[in-house]
Length: 112
Image (cartoon, rainbow, N blue to C red; front, side, top):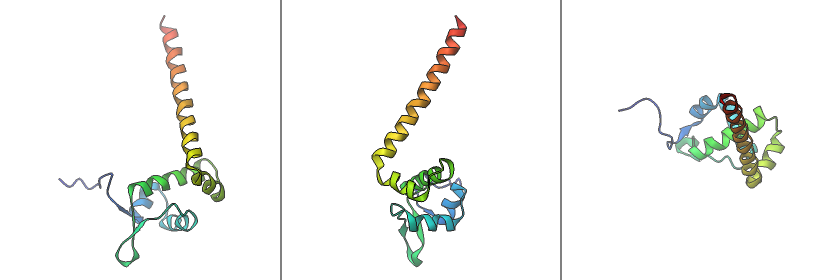
């Protein structure tokens, strides 16, 4: 029953995470040195093993730096205030829901 993919709860190596995020492994090591929140488990030979929550955090860091244009210092400040990040993400979700509802309203208005 091995499908070749790991479960969502499995730990991942730096190479696996790098491939999943479309980054080089050296970028993850650099981020680990800059973001204290990124703290993978170390195994034998000091090998890094990333938990699912580590991968989620790295995905957020990538989004902040590569898509939203934050500097490392800006992303650090935002991530250190998790309530601000959650609030910001919540506001974005609400904005998206409002846009979708307005589109549904527009479509329904065209039906009558």
